[in-house]
Every structure is written in structure tokens, then in C-alpha cells.
Length: 216
Image (tube, rainbow, N blue to C red):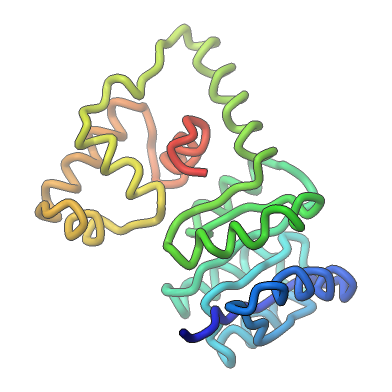
């Protein structure tokens, strides 16, 4: 079985060294490149074609989110895992908007990194527990302020299936194939889900799924 090709992007050499050490404990992982700034990350991703990019948000020359957006535009099949020192929902929302597969807090990377890579390899999303808890707490407060009940109960069983698959990063075409539906039917389900949950884009849908613990 071929190894999972991973690129590390962080401006601190000691952090990259630590991440490499963590990853190389798994014989199925191979670190193929390291970048110390955002522009270098974009260039090396084009040269080495990694399956997974582990990208720090705070990068010199070009910030991690913008660098990740360029990488995903050039190689849509690549999975990006963002690293951050802080649990910041505004950064998380921007990261989800461009299509990253995970958001990890550096202080817990030693526990979360391998699980996040495994999730990304299987085309799923992963968030550090502190991120998931933060989102769940914020969701609860929002519901209380609005005086709303749990809107998840408004979804049909099929809509719940579609919600989870979209939140895991699947396209409408992918969902249609998995559920043996037409793309038109999936689009209709997606529209109704957005309306019922009062969501406006895919990033908000993913945040909702994290808050509800539909995805990890």
C-alpha cells in the first residue's frame, strides 16, 4: 500500500520538526515537503503533489488560509488541515469556506494530528475537541437567544443523510452516487435543509454539523 504523502507548512522549524516526528511514528505516512511561508507552501504543493497539507494559519509572505485556497484551487483533490494557536470562530469560518478538512489547535496537535490525517484520507472532516466544544456552546447560546427548539428534528431521515455527507465535504454529485439519487434530488434536499436550519452557505452547514456532533 502506498504511503500517505504529507506536506508541512509552518514558519517555525521546531514546530515542523515536532509535527514530522509525530507523523513519522506511523509507517503509512510520508512527509514529502516542508514550507516556512505561505508562498513557498503553494510552490512546493505544486511540485510534490501531497495528499494532505498541514498548514499553519499565521504564515509570513502569504497567510495560511489564502495559501490553502490557492492550493485547493490548483489541486482540488488535496486535503488541507489548518493549525492555529487559538480557537477562533472567524478563522474557522474562513477556513471552512475554502474547503479545508480540519482545524487543529497546536497545543493538542500531539493528540489530534494522526486522527485528523486519517479522517482526511477518508474524505471526512476533523476538529480538535476544544473547537467542537466552542461551536457547540455557541450554538446553544444562539438557540437560547432566539428562543428556538432543536431544528435538527425538523429534518427528514433522508435530509439528515444528505446533511452529513455534505458536511463531510462531499459534492452534490458524490452524494447522489452514494445515496443512489439524482443530482437534482440532492440539490432539492440541500435547499430544504438550508431553509429548515436557516443556513446560508456550505461553511455554515459544516459549522452546524460540528456543533450538533454530526461530524467530529
